[in-house]
Every structure is written in C-alpha cells, then in structure tokens.
Length: 206
Ligand code: MN
Image 1 (cartoon, helix red, strand yellow):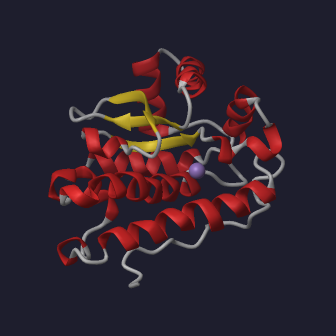
Image 2 (tube, rainbow, N blue to C red):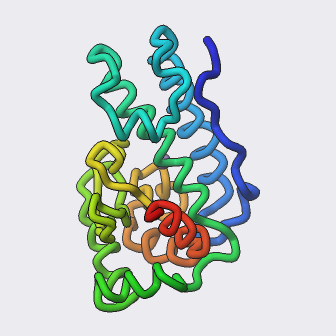
C-alpha cells in the first residue's frame, strides 16, 4: 500500500497540553485514531490515481470528483485526516490567550464579544449529539460562522473554510474527563493557539 497521504509530525510533545489534554489521550489520539484515518484513506484511494496528487483539503472541497464507490470512505477517513491535522495545529502549550488583530475585531463584530463567541461555540460543541466537531469557519462571503458537523464530516464539503475546530468525539476526552464533555470544552480554551488561528483566518481571506 502506497503512502499517498501522510500524517504531519505532531508540532509538540504528547504531554505538552497537560493538564488540559492528558498525555495518554494525546498519544492514542495521534498514533491510533488519526493514523488510522490516514491508513484507511490511503487504502481507499490506492487504485484511483487521479486523486493521488491532490491535497485532502482540495478533495473534500470538491467531493464530487471522488468516485461513488469510495466517496463515503473518503468523507470519513479523509475528513478524519484533515480535521485532525487542523486540530493539532490550532493548539499549543502557550495557548489560552485571546485572538488579536483582524480576527479579534471580526469576532467582536460577528458575535458581540469574545465571551459571546465562546458561549456560542461551547453550545455548538456541547449539543453536538454523538460524535462530531464544533467549528469556527469562514463562509463563501468571507464571514465568520460557528457550525458543527457529525462524525468526521469536513466543513469544506459545504464550502466553509474551518480555522478552528474542536473534536468532541469521546476518544478526544473520555480517558481524562469521562462523560464530562462540558469540562473538556471549558478546559480546551486554555490550549487554543490564537496566533495560528489568526494566521489561518488571514490566509483564508486572501
Ligand atoms: Mn479525534
């Protein structure tokens, strides 16, 4: 099996986000869950050379190019790959501050305040029934929006560009938080790397 899509190296150590995200969760999440999506994605696209030179984000943004017989596998595992790649990159051990610059202004304009934004985002994350993600995305008009998706569905499939995502699958928090998804969500703000989110925002608007 060719390694068509590759998992980027984690940009920090497994214990870097302690105590908010524990080392065991981080290691299992990266080496088992995310790695598993990449492996299954590669198996799905192996015989479809027309997809080999594309980015996973490009494929998800244009899902109709994927042959029907592998479409659901690409949605699940390609989504899983893209979603987790973003997730690792928008967290770090020096996170937890607030957005700055244009992102800060536009969050205030769209959601009333940073606190108001956090409340709406937490609501989206807490009320996602079952497995899925909460997102801060940019819509086709360049406006910020909060949304949630089921399973590993990527916002890219709905022409929405994610700049911040929170994994609310139980595998993301159950070892440490058990059934307390709310506590995981509240603690997660401590590791959000707003500088990176701000950069993704400005890149996406270009
Ligand atoms: Mn996950």
